[in-house]
Image (cartoon, rainbow, N blue to C red; front, side, top):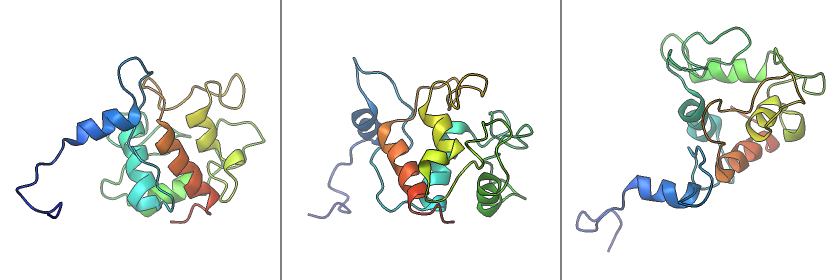
Amino acid sequence: MSAEDPSVPRRPIALALVAACGSAGQSETTCPIPASVTAPAFVRDVLPALQQSCGSRTSTCHGGNAPTGHVAWSTDAPRTSRDVYDDLTIPPPSNAPASFPHRITPGDPAHSWLLEKITKDQPGGSGYGARMPYGLPDLCPPTVTTITAWIDQGASY
């Protein structure tokens, strides 16, 4: 029987997310990518994960016309996924120590400010803001692993 067969019951996606991202007795996580992706793509994997966990609507930290220095994850017209990618990869971060000259340093996760912001409680040391996603549980390991792999593999569009 094929998984496409309508007689085969489908398990709710929520069940998969709970299993992959924690359960009772474990700390909560934000888990837009519940299973690591070994060859991640920006548009297919990374951008949707960032939009889901960090916001893309005007009522969120990184939505609409995000505050100066923030990347706006929105792809609502007139913005495109390429605009978001360029915002993430071209300008330097506005609030980072000199050891992080770029939000994303292709091929160098250790010097990518985005990764520092999503993996450290005090990114860059004190004075550089809080861990992201702000006000939500930490990103789950498969999501961090996927974003790290994307950066390590050159952070291509």
